[in-house]
Image (cartoon, rainbow, N blue to C red):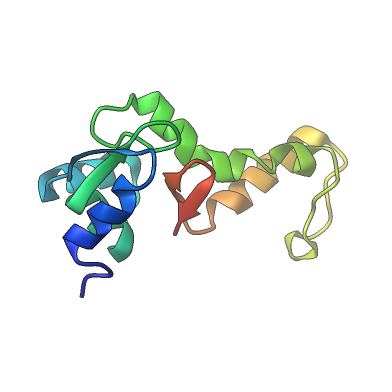
Length: 128
């Protein structure tokens, strides 16, 4: 069931600063999901197939560079790494923190990669 009728969704986005391109085709969505190893959630898929918001802050799933899109997908893991490496963040569930920052970083990155992928929606906002 659609969250918003497609016309209402487009109206809401048109009121923002986004430029609205044609929505992604099912084939484009499948190619993106395969290429980056995730699946759009139902609401997110509805959005990108109804219309593709573009402009500052929006990921360009159709024509964006692979490295830029991958960087945005990596951000939720990369962001806390400084704090993990320097000892500010270490959840007790990870066991004893290694004394070497590089070893702590390897374990931290591995643990964070086990968490559900967060897919960029807009700017620093993500959906699982």
